[in-house]
Amino acid sequence: MFNGTVEGYENFLSFNDIWELLFTRESESVIIDCYVNTYLFLPREENSDIFLNFGYVGAALKGYVQSCRDDNSKEQHFDYAFEKLDRAPNEFDLFFSPMHVGTNHWALLVIHIKEKEFHVYDSLRNKLRRDIPQYVEELKRYLKGKHIDAEKWPLCYPDPCPQQGSGDDCGIFTCKYMKCPTRRDIQDLPFSQDDMPYVQAKFTLHFIKVYFNAQERS
Image 1 (cartoon, rainbow, N blue to C red):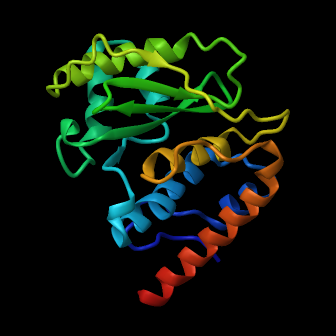
Image 2: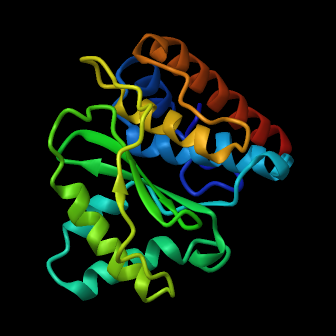
């Protein structure tokens, strides 16, 4: 029922993705992309005054870059992500870069262009993530070629940063982390692990509505 694409989106959710979001939560990359498209970009188009000027550089970017063995390949992957932006990187207030950490975890990197800081939101912060600082260093080198000298920008781990329980909700947490910095009127992260069943159901219903609304328009 959900196979195919929705106008305006390269990879919309399949029925299997919807099922996994609701019951298994194993399609994090696709869900994160669709969340950004339908929860962040669509509302910004409808009411841009309440949103900061933000960009999005792809849910699987970190994993792609760190799998490269040479600098040219890394730069090509960064180019692929950044070329999808509708303006130069230094014209944004902030960027979101969801990161695939290790083998089965997602965290969020927020690049604050105006504040000149990198912020990491990680729902399992108590674990040492050596690959995140390494990735940020790769990103700094790339941004320098885009007229953004981020060499001295600090890497911060802000509070509050809601933490997950023993489940597999890191993809949902990553989505929720993105919502708050985008809106000018929200300063904290008002959710917790206890909210995840409700959030899952809300996401699922939202994606289904977006899909059928798009089908009606087409």
